[in-house]
Length: 285
Length: 295
Image 1 (cartoon, rainbow over the protein chains, first blue to last red):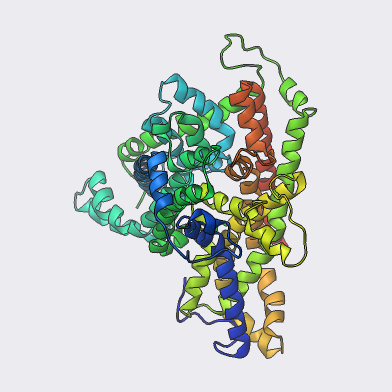
Image 2 (image 1 turned 120 degrees about the horizontal axis):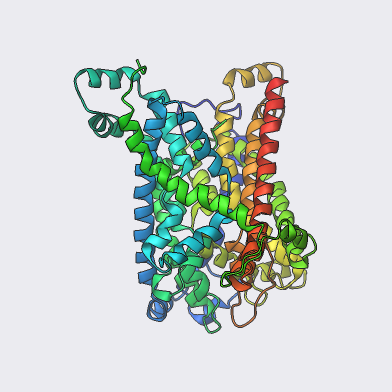
């Protein structure tokens, strides 16, 4: 997002007014991060320090007690593993279905394609929570509760992904390129895999990051389709763990911090991709 | 050029995706609509058609009415915080763009929007905690007595609004920044030549041009707030044996009817209500857009 050539509004860079804005933004940024910083810091505190006021940001006597305790009490690593596999497979499915469907809907015009695209976009208006119950009943009937396929059923396709790819394909991949390949005798499958797919790396990267986060943070669906401790995703395991009577704040914070840090790190690394993807969702109009 | 595409490849490529859509989206949506007209308790073989009875019953169900009231309060509460704060932050960040520090601003404001919901809600739960939480200690400095944030029926809604706003501001800022980038520099230039202050330039040049974006962000914020569930679940669930006040939201009430009371048809009717709310909001957005572009 930061573009050095982007002309800013007329507050100049280092005037007093500009620096005052920096101070405000810096304070807001810190306040937004504070709950997460406290959470991570609490994970390393001893019980007496957890009660101290004002709360310390860097623990006086950091301890690994909480983290070790939590790893001992809960299958947290297993939950992380479950979530990673689930998120990775969901991402793979969303990226591949979006790539092929977006390309086909963008570059071929069969008479019924606009209607198909319309239906795909229309379903995206409907929140997942609305059709979750029938989906659950089907998963249950198929005996897929507590299984990876059952979990994935909710996260195999994403209308926005198809929209994004179609948009990109129609504006950025010239027909002449495809036509030239056809004249040279290339098959349609080859054209898609060897010419189109490499050109779509940008939007697909953004989509992959979005899809991964969507699955990583999914809650309501995993909560209903997993009922045994070994199949929980991280979010579900954590939410149910924190309802227990005997857990203390130190252990809770440790568990939450272990869940939080990977997603925060991943976001920091993928920020550009992510921002591009999310910004794309706002550019429909 | 595209006049004679072979139909075989596109059709074969599309069929699996369409199959997925039919099974995972179109069918369950239709099934929700259908089930909402039946009385059914999952186990029973009897599934009598009851017409609109479920909807009639909903209208006098105190739990459902509480849920829809709470959800609406939360959704609009989040809206009135997110839009002005998001706009102000986006305007400030926009002026600092290109500087290295603006990366920090964007990341820190956006991070709450993407990190996992449950750990983030747990962090806030500790902040709100009546005995140990820093919030009570903080307001104590100003002589305000400690509040039981998560136990009081009104304050627990406030907590939910704070948590959800904290999460949604980042998204609003991001979209507003995209919108601000599209405001032609020449317009600012003209405003400055006319003697407008930076604030006036923003107020009278950028804001009118941003109206469609503001409308879009408002609708997205409302829709996502009508779907909240995890946040209410975490804030209300008990720690140390003391359950907080449960802010009954729409999705929570629906899941309870379906999975605890086994009233699937009734829960489906609630889902239809949620769908209608979302459709009305989306429709309103399109309508306002059309009017605006005509004007």
